[in-house]
Image (cartoon, rainbow, N blue to C red; front, side, top):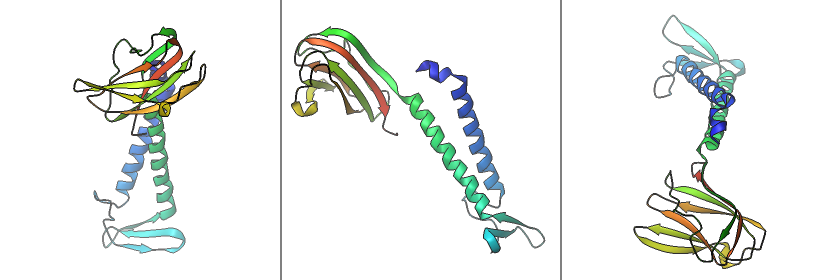
Length: 195
């Protein structure tokens, strides 16, 4: 993930999106709008989607509503692109286990996982060599509770499952499995809820 963040293509795309957004907003603000987004002066509607904007008694200019809408669509597009880029940046890997033996009803991770954002999602991907029940162990303020995943039904051996668990500041999370098994793969990533 860090390699993607340092990729010049990602950085260049982010810079270009920010520059386009800034230029578009500046262009719109110079086109007769005040700080509140209202037209500064009197306007007249002309044919074919054009507005005539009068700045004072002697000067006026014409603006195409279609062109303004096109520019605004680029603003929305660039915001969507930046959101997509940020979502790739903000996903954080919290834990990863591969082909590791685990004991029954014992914390899988050596230390509890805590959120970087609040509230947020911990997305859990899990696959075990034996059928069993996966449980989230949530600790807050010194109290630990169990949250059984998959409606308490056993996960099938060698099958992959994915669960989203909402976590907030003050929570710490660990996982337990009801039987001794090999954790073929367990990955926990944090996905901020702003996505």
